[in-house]
Length: 438
Image (tube, rainbow, N blue to C red; front, side):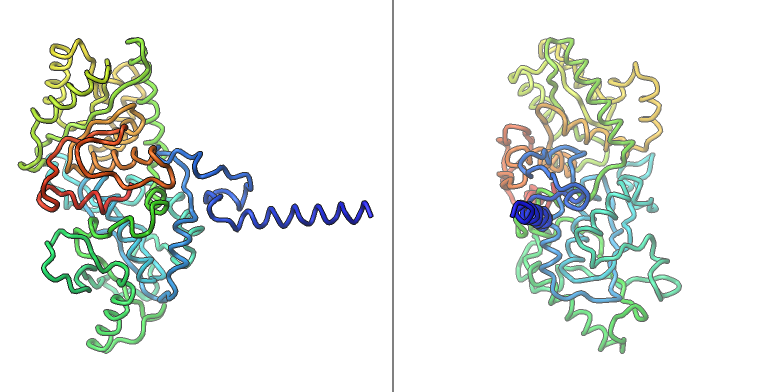
């Protein structure tokens, strides 16, 4: 009898272990396949640049796609700009790919900007690893959405045309938009899958094409500018909070960002506190004329930081002249507040400084991104997609997996505050708050 009870208990424990791995809300992508002691999602700080990727919301969205189309591939490389733009373009393209039921994507490439002209953003592509961790991306997508194959390049697509040419289209044009502003979100995303099938069928008839298959692929590339297309909360807060985690920065950039943060804590400690504010000054020569100017940004940042008691601030900017100007104002007008950039933080750390200076302008911005996420309060500017991306990522501190949308406006959320105009939904770029993946 004792032996039977023991065997029964062991059987029940085994079943419980197997069942726990079927419960998606308890599993990170690297757990429940290798480690069944997954932490509760509420215990994971999703606002960090190196936060783990929770896979089950993406798994759920992929399961909701009932029809997958062999031979159909999306190429997600028609992007440009800084990390905010490029990150959102890739994520939006991938979300469209899932909705369309495509069975392959090409590993996204990243369009670069000119070193001598920051406004020149349509330069040759660099590989995915220019910003991101390729192994992490492949592993996360394979576990979450195994229906989709990742080709390394367009050359790897079986039976792709030579010379290569993709069919281009704009997703939002597949639905009747009526009198919508051209910048408005795609209100037809829930029906995009059916509309895409109609596009496949219509063009196949028009050009006498066979049904898509491995032997007869159909390869699509979106026109530029689809990164602000999808109303992100249509998939639920848990999807919004976790989807961006599939794009993890390169380990060397994350490590450098952590070291910058550590040095900032040490600097702040000299002022009797390890707390520091983060600031993003967006006044480079490619900033739009309608955006808040230097005076608006600097005055707002410094006065509010001083009121909050900060003695030290980390400044992210590509404009060194105005960085020095802001730091001077902080010292002279705000009680000796010390404001430093990443280069100044690392000036006494030769090896780290050499690593930083070996990076391009946009890669160095990723180091800023990491440090600003780790700051104790963040000041940025709307409608900079960089500032918005940092603020919305930090917003995940408010509710983790179940974070509610950022309330659009200048009052912040207790973790960040963005200077800007909040009157006109389109002219003030407020639509970006509804279409940006944290």
